Image 1 (tube, rainbow, N blue to C red):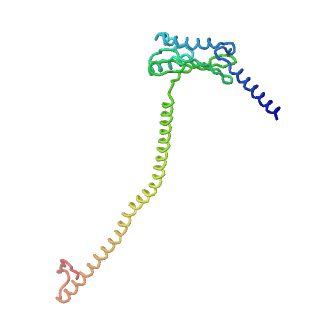
Image 2: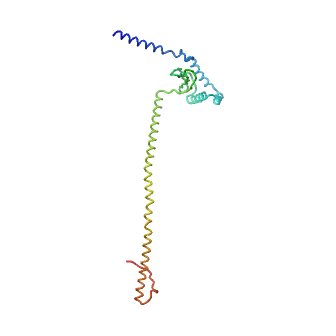
Image 3: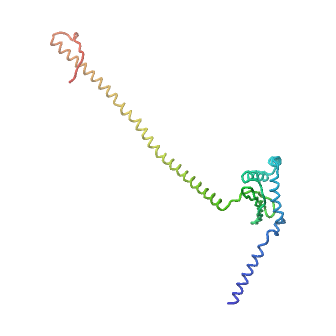
Length: 238
């Protein structure tokens, strides 16, 4: 039992020793031939160059410079316009993750701190990208995340409302077509009896003519005269 406890304690001491060895001082570490101070000097030199760069120099680089440099100049101008002029340097952190090495220099501006980050490919130490990012507090990050969540929910509800309105419109179209068909069918029913009324009127006029002739013949027979001298002014039916 004592031997097992001794072996477990020895293994724990070995693991602690390996962990302590792995936690080397970043300021004395060698980053594929580049020292901590060289990475720091590169970041700080970039900031000083951007700070004292004239408008003519900016125009020169923007016309014929590399895309990475042009983007860095534009981001720096935007940061200065939004957060004020550069004041002082803050913390400098070097982080190695897999095949990527990042060197981040905190910059104290008048209104807010920003971070200048160099991203290197570790095996060649070539610069992949240079970024400028503002430093936000936890409360500001939570507030921004909450606003993004609310905006996302509002967009989803707006899309759902639009879909519901479209579906409702599809139900209205058949009703409108049916109503239109009914409106066009009503005049046809009203106009259809018109020929029958004309026929009845013509038949009535024919009957009135026969009645007039019969009355005129009866009166002529009673008077012993011809029907030429009779004129029927009107006929009243009771």
